[in-house]
Length: 133
Picture 1 (tube, rainbow, N blue to C red):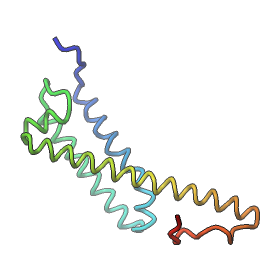
Picture 2 (picture 1 turned 60 degrees about the vertical axis):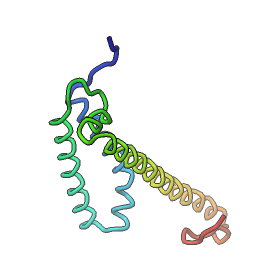
Picture 3 (picture 1 turned 120 degrees about the vertical axis):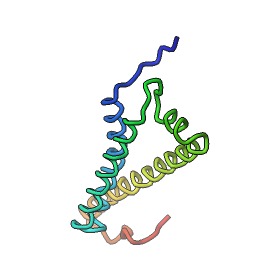
Picture 4 (picture 1 turned 30 degrees about the vertical axis):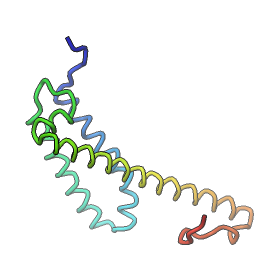
């Protein structure tokens, strides 16, 4: 007998929502800065609607004996669908890591620039637009 714990539908929806929202929240500052308030708000609303329907479809088609999303994907879409799911999920993680890195570097640059400026050495640091190694 398997000792794995089964998740309720509510906990599954909350876990999916947490994963999707966690990554999206990191990209919101960049989105709003680059795209503007109106278009960013429209994109955010569309993203929320897509997330809602995705979670709703998953909960509707989830079977009690399936403990992971991969098992549901394999049952519904087959082995090729499972491979596509893994590729998309992996790509999503890589993309989020790039966003994390961009946000960290942006914050770090601002902090370093502040300290250089305090010492009167702000002209010794490259601008954000310069590509330096």
